[in-house]
Length: 601
Ligand code: GDP
Ligand code: MG
Image (cartoon, rainbow, N blue to C red; front, side, top):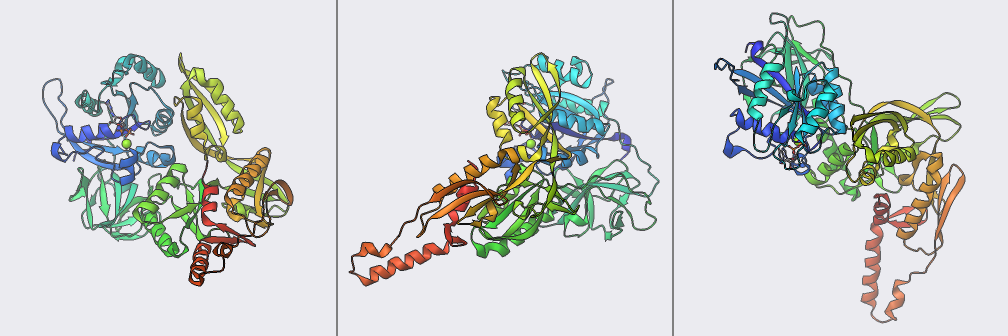
């Protein structure tokens, strides 16, 4: 295809503003998905994506479109639409999808207006020099205020309110005109046709039937069928088994030329061998200079995952191996916990990523899991200048600590101005620093904060929603680290540390954490033959204490001598129950108590 007739674009939007629905309409309108095959969110393939209505893996689709020009002639064009995930955890997937495009549709719900992720994604698009087409969606809704929000959008990106298109992804109104505008406004890709091939990998997906499917945009030259190719970062050579495009199912082709977007299959088994951000060239007389790559995604949040039934450990390991085939951001290593047994310390991009992985492990692999409270990564500098990276609070170094560094994020919060006070108060209690504030319109304000990541991974979003009656939105990106007054709080049962409950918290919050955990455990731990003190400690200093009083639980006493077989049955039953007990020092704790104590309240 002549690159002049190609348009590569993506849709960026805040979650729920209608990106997937708009993509559906485009698939229908361009005729590549027939009416009767149409199902909502056609491109959201994973079950969890469908159920939660979110898009996790991005997908690229090729659609034919012949815009009607003023003189009535129609020139067939190729539109490559790259769907991007909308959630903060997956920003790195958004940015690499953007790098494959020349333009983007900035989609905003006409009843909601601009939200935090709209802004975050807009900034990403601007950094990538994309042509931005502002569009208001859901104009069919009675609550839509297109005039108001067109003005807001125009103000934000510096265009005229009339330039903001209005569509309904639900009814299809305005979607054809939007596709015409994509052809008119988005620049055609430019590249050197006669140069050695350079194709950028922007996604890599593991498919149970096909192996790793690699999505590429050819920047220069051409890649042909059956060609021998080379990954430029590793120099690994592969044979192209298949090359083609998605329209919307995989369709093999003879090759891909300048500006084209499509997929490759090489027979590699692991997405890490077909690394996102890498450049592909021919094996013979290939390019010498790679295209600019992307940063590797870095896990920000860690949690211990343990099988409820210890014998499921090998299954958990296999399941994690399988998920990793498709998720280069997922990292894990084995760990053991006195309280929870054998498991893994798993690193995630954020809380949603954690939830999605956990849900997939439980649902697709049938595993029952216990997860420890998520924590961020700390860098601990000792007085002798040695350094430790701590991904598990129970492994916080003992000895003379000089400084503890924690990750911080730059957060963007958007809300109606009446909530400014509530938001500031919340950010204050979370150790936030106000960086700036702007009015987007008379009654909507954008607040920019730096916040410790640890303060937002738990319940910040819920707290924000409840303080603003659901009107505020949040987006954040990691910006580095800061040193802070952080301490490790241990929880002790009868003098023994329960590793799963160790936490790294700010000095001012240590007491509250200790009191809360000790209180919770007192409720959950059954009485034993002896008194069990529950203590919270910072180093050797006890900061909170509760006690589980002793009882003598004589199950046989109820049996009044009598029936011996009944006694035996009772003993058996008690033994049965003991198997599900975990022993910490001298104390027997039912596994349920750990689970209950670890679940947030
Ligand atoms: P995404 O998160 O941006 O992909 O949003 P979805 O496409 O999943 O849409 C979110 C919700 O908005 C769904 O319930 C859609 O049915 C609904 N929706 C999307 N577009 C429109 C529209 O134009 N009009 C109306 N009334 N609802 C829409
Ligand atoms: Mg979606």
